[in-house]
Length: 237
Image 1: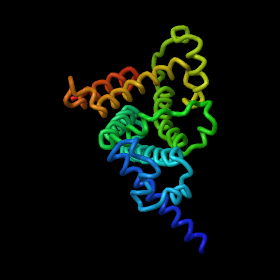
Image 2: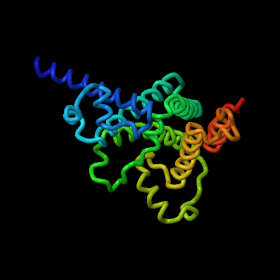
Image 3: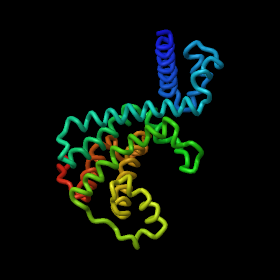
Image 4: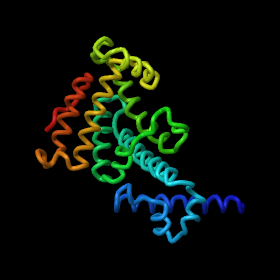
């Protein structure tokens, strides 16, 4: 019983620390999220904080994990509101859900998608909470594009157009895309970076010079991508 009480208190303190870190993030960006700053926010001493997070990197990884899981849960809830057999609707829900979350949480989005991801060769990078949560988020889009491919394979560039080095890298990823060929993965990655890049530019205010509201442009881009994937997508209004 006593052990259970300690575990609950520890879990509550961990949650308070991460909540404080998020407030600092929203208020001052990632540079404001330091262990000393979090300790001050909670009225703790820095050594007390080290009992919960041994380093700044550990705290940031835990915060990133929470944010990715929050985003993933929000997107999964959106998917549950739509017919799972309508893959075009699923694509629209996920893409627009990501954009909506990013615009509502610009500081959090900047931490998730503006933070350098450790190289696959980095020691223990796959064991960090942040990396594991990022993989859960990415799996949503990988699974959807694989569903689209197996339902109705879309045209893709031949291997010789991509080059041997790129084909080799894409082939290594095939198992994560349910056996899709390199060219199909290449197109999927192209479309993902296209939408991701557009969301980044909008969130960071890089489209205001030409588009006061980038929503219509995003919808047009999404429609174009849906058409290329062979989906029956509604035309932008």
